[in-house]
Image (cartoon, rainbow, N blue to C red; front, side, top):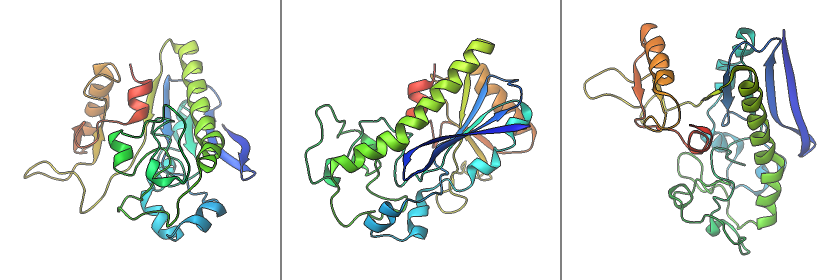
Length: 243
């Protein structure tokens, strides 16, 4: 049996995140899908210059459904229900783009990270194909509300799952689940077949080498083409939670 726990809060009266938990926790592995949320709030649709289909270009669409059998095998799945175009939880909380706001950002905001400069801060300025999301400036109060409603519940839930795994197994392994282009920008090895899986471990700094090696061996043994850290080495979650 799989139990579903939703973090009901002020996200427009709806759930911001969902945790699918196994009947019996049998593994220190935690699956997390931060970019597959499909619940687009009306205020985003109203303020955006893009329609829902265009906004969805930033999704890792349906990645959560690929991993939703994890609880049947003793591992939990955490998934964001809100869209990445609204809040990107794979960013630091203070990665804010001053070009987006009509008022001043709070002291200490990280306005110069490479992701912010690219328009991909915690409140994104653009979608994946480079289109601006808004045709007007936002107020910081809007961003602050999104962080409280979406960002904080996601990371609180992830931290709790990590603590539970550590308490039972002495360690925790977070598999942060994403998709990548299947054509056009899909990663290739020169002269070889396209890559099916990219394992990003921050070049060995976010987990024990044996973890990445086991994942690579397992996937390769199933016939998949596997790469490490190129072109995706891992983002904020890998840096912040990885050891």
